[in-house]
Amino acid sequence: MTCDEHRTLLFLAGELDAEDRASFDRHLLECEACWRAVTEDRRGRTLAEALREPAPNGLADRIRLATETRQVGATPAPSTVAAPARRRWAHGRVAVAAGVLLVGAAAGAGTTFALTARSARTPAASAAGTSSMAATMTAVHLGHALPMHIDGPPVREPTTLGTAVSMTVAGVQLSVTYYRVGTGEALVVESHQRFAMPSGGTPGHHAGAWTAQLEGLTVWCANGTMSAAIVTPMPGAAADLALFLGMSV
Amino acid sequence: VTGPRTPAGGGPTAEFVEAALSHLDSVYRLARHLVPAGCNPEDLVQETFVRALDAAPREDVRDVRAWLLTICLNVVRNEARWRSRHPEQLVGLGDGHEFGAGPASRSTSDPRLATEADPARLAELGERRRAVGRALARLAAPQRDAIVLMDVVGCTARETAELLGCPRGTVLASVHRGRRRLATLLESEGIDDDL
Image 1 (cartoon, rainbow over the protein chains, first blue to last red):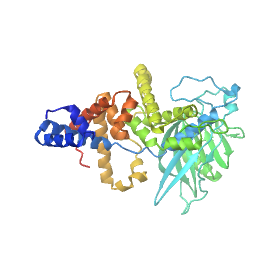
Image 2: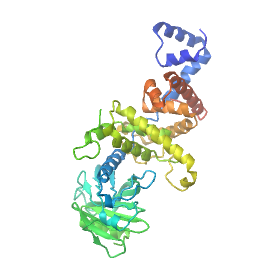
Image 3: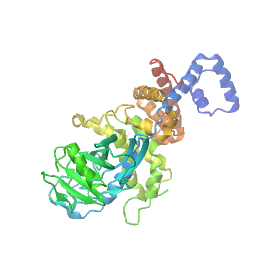
Image 4: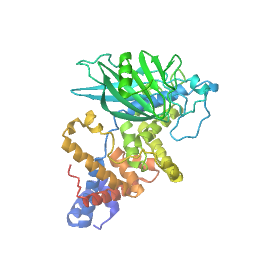
């Protein structure tokens, strides 16, 4: 038998018939070149298979949310639609939602919380001529309710759980951090873009700041070069966390 | 499988979204290893699903995974093209992505990797993946594409040929030469297939 890459390929693909296979097996014993081709192929395949990693935690939720956001933004009233800007990754709508799956690696108690912030159009933002990059959280909905209280003693001061999760939602980059505060918990959503105040919100003492109650959650927001919003089911936790973070609201 | 719209006239049904998401790992693996340098694969995966789910109601999709992988390949190639045309806009984007530099919490918090709980072993696995990823990036594009689709994503040679738009024999030859090169490159780094 002569050396023939085509035959080697068929052998590796398991497509030689019994007779050809037996013949190739014998050939392998006496041909260094073909033996090497086969062993290197198998080694290379095993090495490549080491790259079979699962998708990162939270990516599925991020996609669900992005899909949902597009549906919400799909039929806005014409007057509130910004001209579709040619931006990469930007499904630029006035509204944006933050959704994230946070894995709280609490000591001894790994807990998974899924927080979904639903979005809706914000006429106020577009009427005011806010850029299409303006990120507006208008309604927050918990996919799985954050418990009001956590078993165990209250923490003395706000403590982060896990690391900040970065995500791009509707073209807006967000960073979300999960905190334990007292006996409750809160999320801090940060962005380089401003969070527009939803209708029913109350302007804060500082320029651009506002607070609001959205679907049973308290949202405190400070806008600036870096904007941050605290979202929590416990009003007291928002105040404590704002104080701890030095956020002027 | 077709993706009917929800009664409210919005996007695809929740069932269709979940059916598509059952192929998330496949799409992620493709994006992660064919992504242009400096680009975050998660953004490309999100873009893939958003495009797919937008189009779903208008398409008659028979093989959801192949359909998603086709869209992902297009997204990856468009991104590579965009980057080659607009290099000036890429300075300081800060979304660089290194092989194996995913979220630190991933490997330990992922239940699918629970059997790999030994930290030393996890570190070793991570180091091996980074080395293989670097070697993979050095292969010629046809070889890399074939290896990613067949060995990393898990497509058959026929599926790979359809996705890449080339004959099946070409795929078998590309994947074979690519594997050999990968083995040789890594051997010179002292990394073998002994896991």
